[in-house]
Length: 46
View 1 (cartoon, one colour):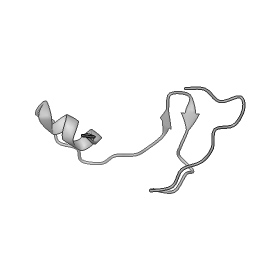
View 2 (cartoon, one colour):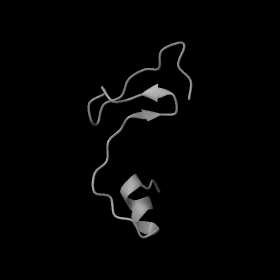
View 3 (cartoon, helix red, strand yellow):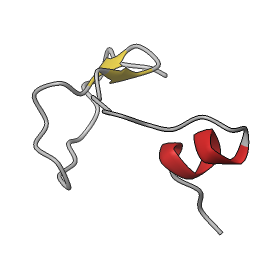
View 4 (cartoon, one colour):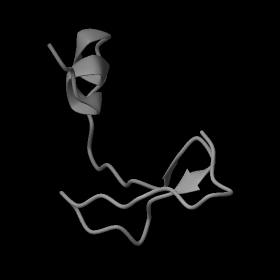
């Protein structure tokens, strides 16, 4: 089972008002459209 960020927050009593993807680790995601993905560049690591 996969839990999303809103579910995890609600489990500890928090309510998500807004959510914005910026990065995962050192990989920037701000310009990747919602529901899309991209390949990692050779120099990128988590």
